[in-house]
Length: 404
Ligand code: ATP
Ligand code: MG
Image (cartoon, rainbow, N blue to C red; front, top):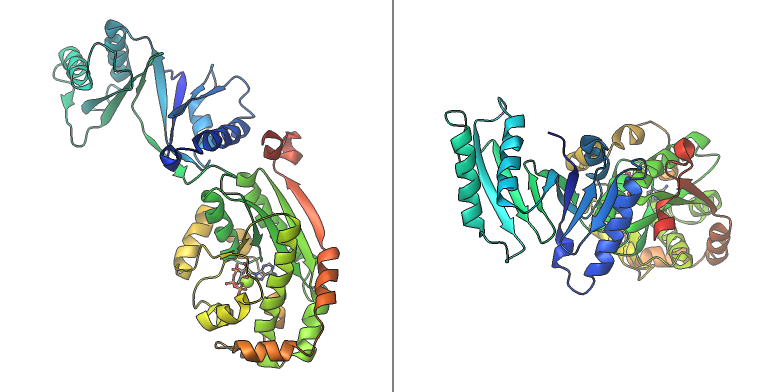
């Protein structure tokens, strides 16, 4: 069977009324970008669906390329035909003929968005089902509950589409439709997963990484860049803000009682991240925290740490167990990179017994003897910005941002 189209069905976007056009436009841009290597393929968008005209391109390769795009609920390779009933019957038969040997049972599911079409959905199901049974007597049977083939017939004003396979898309909302947020990206397992989940809900992200040379190596920075590159597969490109954090960490070790250094370190990271967020005009900070996972992620710790900013902090992993997070990291293909043994700035300075129930008044009191403001400003100023263009090395192609 030579398919000539791919049908793309939207997920939740279809429930958005007023913003629908902008949602669809964003999805369209993202898909167009994902299709950049398939020059002959053309994309057509309507309010309810998108169609890719394959023009000879391989449907399987295109589906593999776009099924990870957020905002797509499902995809089907399809055949576009005219609206004449005899033509539809012939195409349906041709379709099942191609599958001979692979299927024993089928059903026909018609959808009709054009109510002027002379047959309603029931009549169509019977007409086509009967036609197939007559021509495949003894070979095919109808099974409405669990058929091997669910032959979908979509009757639209401009044409009729026949499709059999319904492939799950990535779901979620189109890239950028929820605005922009800053992901605090460590070299660990959790934060990249938090990044993917946020992008799934339509966020565009930039990464912030704190590093502390010479306590952390160039190699650990590279590990973070490798993770950012994975995230850029969705983002299209990725801005990574690398914050020099050594001076502040050393000062914290000197000035803050040992069991509060971790709490204080997190508070300062958050203040710096928020200053960068403001400069980049983003609306939230994302972390890979999961409740109770380590000392800094108890409720008491989060209460004492979060106090320094009023910006929303999104924690997509808050209710997940480590094993669930690892499963996702494998799915997103970041697990192996995260698992490399390079040190992180926080692990290097982690005290032997960090407070799991830090008191806000105490950390405020300890910090009151130190002037961190100037150091924060300096750290923001000296932050190195690296931009990863996905695919740049391979093709020199435009980045997705050019399309928005
Ligand atoms: P991860 O696996 O993401 O490193 P973790 O379980 O090791 O998380 P922590 O080290 O306590 O937990 O970090 C909690 C969160 O704080 C991380 O998920 C990340 O969002 C942020 N974070 C920690 N270290 C850094 C860093 N060096 N640079 C940027 N963000 C960081
Ligand atoms: Mg970590």
